[in-house]
Amino acid sequence: MTNISLDSVGNFNHRPRAQLGHLPTPLEAMPNLGKALSEAELFIKRDDCTGLAMGGNKVRQCEFYLGEAIAQGADTVLITGAVQSNFTRTVAAAARKLGFECHIQAEKRVSHTSSLYYHSGNVLLSRILGASISSYHEGEDEDGADKQLEVIAAELRADGKKPYVIHLGPDHPQIGSLGYIVAADEIIKQANELEMQFDKIVVATGSGATHAGLLFGLRALGNQTPVTGICVRREKALQVPRIAKHCDNIATVLDIENPVSLTDIIINDDALAPGYGQINDAVLEAIELIAQNEGIILDPVYTGRSMAGFISLAKQAISGEKLLFIHTGGQPSIFGYEDDLKPILSKNID
Ligand SMILES: *Cc1c(COP(=O)(O)O)cnc(C)c1O
Image (tube, rainbow, N blue to C red):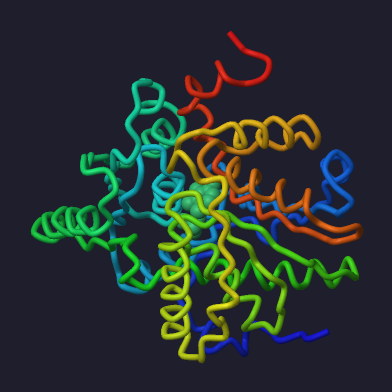
């Protein structure tokens, strides 16, 4: 068993990092789901339990973004995302904890008629956290959204503030990915403690920061477990080069060779239709199945979809195979999507 430490992953330990998460997160068995589905043994990494303001994968990413913001002497953090973005809510919380102001740009990526979508869930939490919020109406337009955020940053600078902008476009290095190198290290150690090896790890792939960081981290730490990214935002043909680019960027940031080859990038977009943030039957089934077998809550945008992908892989797995699902969080958005969910659950709720 290889035991490469994080110290030897380039300049990883010299990157600025703010401690924000409750880490390591638990890694648990899902015996009931396993029995219900397949001959395989199913496990879950509880990154919904990262702690800060209802947790999720963005807490790990924020440790490195906010660390950088502190290193640059910033006083205000700016972030853009979908209206029900977990990232913007988590940045708002991280900013408060570390003494920053926070501005959120909410993009209308999904057209919605429900007022809950615009006011409840993550939006409500961001308001409680005291973030200022502006809206951006162009839907799927990463470059445009990043540019508009720069306009707001320029206004803040003119007012004497020191803004730090978290860009989401793939041309900017996703330093949040470094948080998933930490997760990779935890998974390797937890598997060692359990005296086992996973045959497959399954994770949602959206911006790709989580997927790229996890894959890069495993390979850099000498672990070859296959990682399947389940598309939640764009199709496979677009997601593969995106992950490859993120991995190149991480290698540059850490000043090491990129240990991820193109064949390492496994992407599955079978559960993506009809598109980002839009529920389908497989997503609903996944949400109900895991809640009713394991008492675990998933969200309708990300983990419901990645679990739908995990379920179909678990059904195809052979006896004794060990599959790990990364629960990336997102539960607050359930309340923003309540109107979409209720009428279509198998037992309708009033
Ligand atoms: C953002 C998010 C993802 C996707 O993570 P990326 O790093 O953007 O690929 C998955 N699950 C949840 C709950 C998220 O909020």
